[in-house]
Length: 300
Image (cartoon, rainbow, N blue to C red; front, side, top):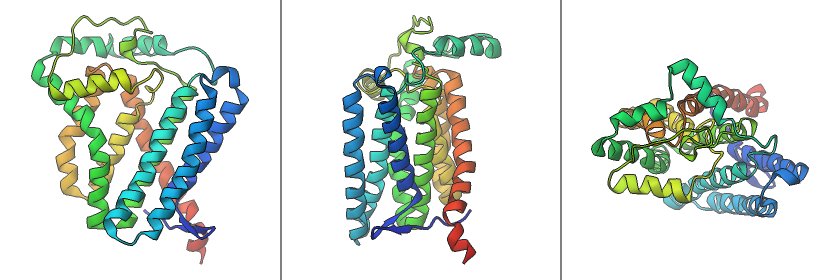
């Protein structure tokens, strides 16, 4: 794979992830402006996207003026967290921009035809305290894997490898976010598709954190494709490419994470498959974008 170069724009070294963020902001702004009646809390969308467009380059400028490795790492990684946070929030508010309905019933019918039933309800028979806690740990620790793997790549393999990893993470988040708009799916636990769960999920510390995330962070619409599974696949793939020990450590966690999203009723099985497919699309598309970005330099 080609090394991803930076380009100097107004004296600031800009990389593909930065261009991706600004283009996505522009598209979301245009959608919010074009379909005002379909965007709840439209002023908040516009305000938050405006704030992110100002905050993002400020962090980028600070990062490139910082020469000490640790603060530079924090700032470069934080800018991608800004991208993920604001793009995800905007996508959830724009989820019905192309149509008012949810597609949960179609997902449920499709899975009944393929699996002979609904995986999220079928998994209730295996609910156990220890299993729930392990799977919720895998679901929650995804939040920590992203910066930890980033730190390993930055400090052991160099800034360029970390930038490549951050670009692919950004790309899969953007692809999944547009998926929310094109095929709005709420979530199994919301009952929009008529599913009912009669076995509670009981666990300990990490189960409590997962339930807090469900109650206070998640909103209907961030389901298909699963960003959780898409980003986790990119993390696993990046670990395989750049840090093989990390790959082996992550393997049981990532595989369990796929299961946890369905077991924990955060996603349908189709969302998981969609997230993994989005990750593979990001791998292919990302490589093509890197080649196009580097084309002028390669010609020379």
